[in-house]
Length: 124
Image (cartoon, rainbow, N blue to C red; front, side, top):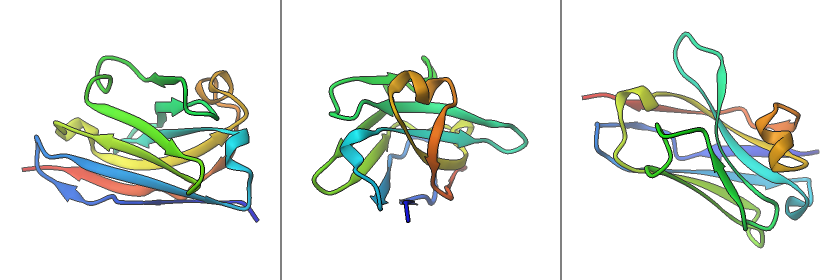
């Protein structure tokens, strides 16, 4: 059974840093691009970042996260990370880990597996 389990979500203040983790089981992680999505309050789930199966390529949602967020992975440990720095209230939401066949599959919504999400709240 495939599982993607997110962890690390919590309440932080603006300007703080936070690292999310996604631990995979039941799949050969090196065969999948991994990614993060966010569902902000009252909004649809949207793409945040993704990393290629070997970790050599990354794509971010746009200037709102690029430069502040960093996605990485450790295939030996079967973990993906999302390092978030200089956090803002608009980063608030439920963050989901996802696995897809490739970066293009990830960014076009062709997701093979989802995690259940972890809540991140940025508030003063």
